[in-house]
Image: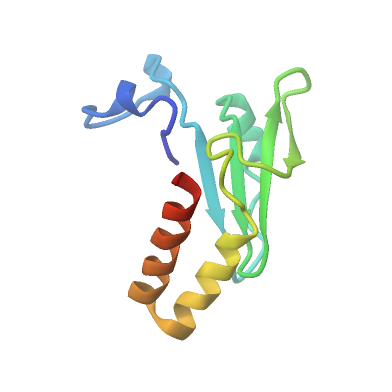
Length: 117
């Protein structure tokens, strides 16, 4: 679970307790490579987590919470990282196995620099 938009509000907290009124995370990332996992979407919906990324070893799917229906729908662009081309993430993860983590991180940094100039 990641805090992006609300990171400042939880920065110095040692523990986060949603039952005590702490803000829910902005993003949940599920990695499920070996088998289909339990559908936790109803739990995330009850917590009002706005975005879920689900990676199965090949494909990254992004879901956004529909606040009216309290269900998740596939979306094409991240709410938390709107400038990120999500199709690159699975490529970087696979590339890491071939050229190594450091070389891949260097390429990711170069891509980020290219987006911010």
